[in-house]
Image (cartoon, rainbow, N blue to C red; front, side, top):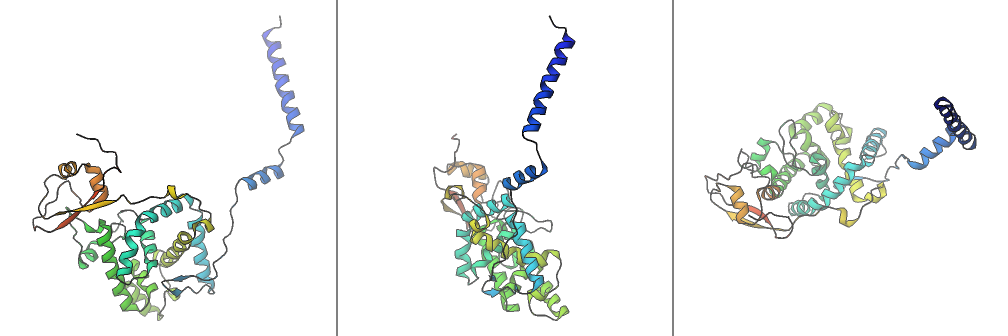
Length: 310
C-alpha cells in the first residue's frame, strides 16, 4: 500500500497537470475576455430624435445646452430598465382614467406624462407634503375643491385629483401663454416661474436658468413621453399579458357616516384591504361624514380578488 503522503503528492500532481493542459489548450487572454463581455452586454449611445415637442410646442434641439440636457434624460430613463418597465405597466392601467379627464378640460394629452414623473403613477408622499399620483400640496388641493383632512384626502382620489390638476394647469397656461411654462409651474409654482422670467428677462422655459429639479423637469417629461410612446424603439420588450389593468368596479353612494369600513367591505363581499386599494382617499378605518356629504365608494366587481369568506 502507498503511504498517505505519497497518495496526496500523486493527487496534487494529477490536478496540476490537468490545469496545465487546460491552460495550454485554451488560454484566457484579455482579448477573449473582453470579446465575451461585449457579446454578453452592450450599452449604446442613443440617437437624438429629429423633432420633439410638448403639447405641440417645439423643443429647440439645435441649442447645444437643450440637446445635452435632453440626451441625459433619455439615457437615464432608457437604461433604468426596471423602472421603465414598471412605468409602462402602470401607464396601461392608469392612462385610460387620466386621458379622458384631460381631454374634457382641453388640457393636452401630453400632461399625462407629467403625472408619471411626479409620482411614478403611485400614491406617494413627498418630503414637502405633496400627495397622490398628481403630487398636490394641501393648500393647492383645497383651493381647487379637494377635501383634505385626517379622515378623507381626495388627493388620493385619481379622478378628482386629475380634475384639480387640470384646473391648476389651465390657470397657469392662461397666465404664461405656454403649455411648457404651465408644466414647469406645476413643479416650481406660478409665482416661482414668474419671478424667474422677470428676473432673467426671458419669456421661454428653455432660456431660463433654473435649479436642478425644475431645470430637469421638462426634459424628464419629454424623455418619458418619447419612451412610453415607442417603448420597443428603446429596447423595452413585453407582452400584453405583462401589463397592469384596472379591475372593473362600480360605485356605491354613501351620504352618512360609516362607523366601520371593514364591516362595510364585508357587506359588499370584499375585505378592508381591497376596499382601501380602490379607495385610497379613505384615510381612516371609518368615514366620519358629519356634513352628510355624498361620497361614491368604489367596489370591485366580483371574481377578481381572492376573498376569504367569513
